[in-house]
Image (cartoon, rainbow, N blue to C red):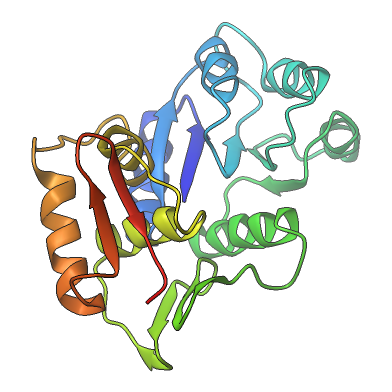
Length: 219
C-alpha cells in the first residue's frame, strides 16, 4: 500500500517514514503544502498523513482543495494543534481521523490501517484469486490454506497484482506501487521479486505478457 506523508519536520518525517516502511507500506514524503496538493492530485495513494502547519500552503487548505475535487483518499491529520476548535475544524474540512503530536508510532500505524480498512468498506478487505488469498490489513498471505512467508517487497508486489486478478500491470506501475520516490530501484528489481514469488506460488501463477507486463491468474 502506498502512503503520502506530509511533514515539514525532518526528524519526525524521517522517523515516521522509516516506521511505516518497516510496517510494510511504501511511503512518499513531502515537506510543504504545495507539494502535498500536487502529490494528492496524482490519485495513487491509499491514505495521506497530513500535518497542518506547513510551508507554502497550510494543511487545511490542502485538505479542502482535495475534497473540493471530490478526492476520497482517507486523510489522517497528525499535528501539534490540540485545541478542540482545531480538531473540529480538521474533521469538518474532510479529515477521516485526527492525531495529536507527540504520538506513538504504533498507534499511527494502527490508525492508518483502520482508515484503509474503513475506506475499503468493511472490517476486512481480503483479496482472492482461486486458492490464493491476501489480507492487506493483517499483512498475511495464504496459498491453499497454508501461510506464505513473503518479504515486504514480495508482499507489496503480490498485493498490487491481487487487486485486479487477470489484469496486466506494467513493470513501471508495479515499481510505483512497491517503491517510494526516495528508493533506489535497480533496473531488474521487479523481475527479481517476481522470480522469488514464483518460487513460492508456483511458476504459472504469475504470467508475463511479453512487452506489456504481468498478471496473477487462477490455476
